[in-house]
Image 1 (cartoon, helix red, strand yellow):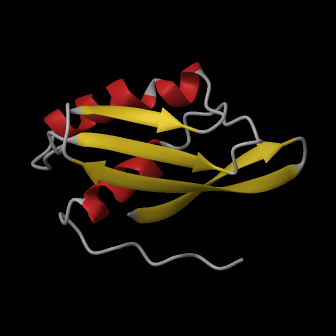
Image 2: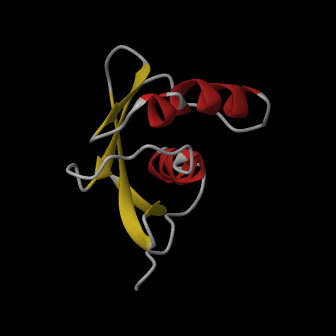
Image 3: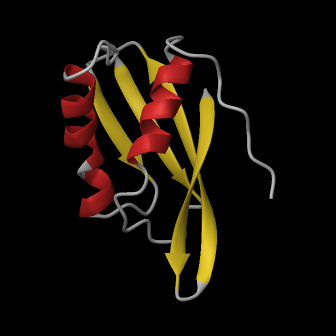
Length: 102
């Protein structure tokens, strides 16, 4: 499993959202879990498009992405880069990202 981070804003505060990715055998597809809405759920199609336009390979396996904590609505498209980075790291296409400390 690989973990990355993204930040969303809530009023005047920034909230760190952990993006965890796990790739397993099974029917290929991307599942985003957490308190994601349509904007974050649309990341699946944006990721497919981005991967198809690059030299990078989107694994043809079951990709589960967890946005944590699960009690905060993740209603932003700002997770795309963190999700892509986590997928690349867990699939071995890049070294694991260095966790940021705050």
